[in-house]
Length: 299
Image 1 (cartoon, rainbow, N blue to C red):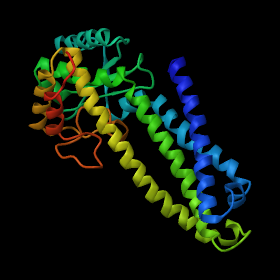
Image 2: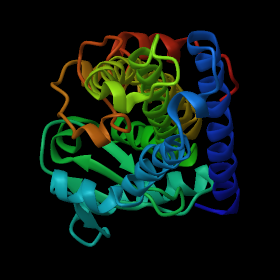
Image 3: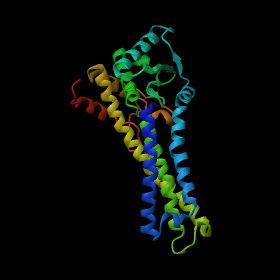
């Protein structure tokens, strides 16, 4: 990931663990009248380690294997431009956009399916950009170039890593806070009692709280993903020198049925669907077009 990203990852993890300790102690003092160590016992340290490993490292391990997983899940085949004229143009366009974005050329792949495209990979200088056969057949070269510019902006901005980091942080919070609150609720009025005295209540509360907090965490991730889509659209406009091609590509997508990507790839796709909601990884086509029309930076 590069020394800067590794440093950011380590610092973020330390900050998350410190913040979790502070938040958990505050909750226990306010709701239980004691420290988190007294409320939960020696398992508190184990819980922090579990939250770190499952919440943070688990997310990044998934990201490290994102390229082969993406190829397998979509049936994507890497190309080098020797396959035909369309493939040659596709590879040359990605190479040109990569130079403009200041990154190494990603792997280029094509997969069978309805109109969509995505980018993935743990390293911005060793990423994967893939387009569907349908989007290649339905779009003009300028529209497809704008789509590739959008995906290249995701790569250049490190959106795959950033989104994974956000998801990992939220996973850790859900794991720790749900168990702290469950201990407080299960042991309420029991003095020095611990969860072993009321194990059934504890595990029920962990299940309920983890579900509820997990839903809230998902809403945060979806909101963040939608913000990154606006940034990737703007990035494509910068790479092409005009927002008109990206606007045309989005309008074309609005007249097509976007292909459904696996959950792990949805956030880095060019489109999710025609409708949008608080559960969507992408804003609506109309909102994205309006944002491009209102761009104020100098292209």
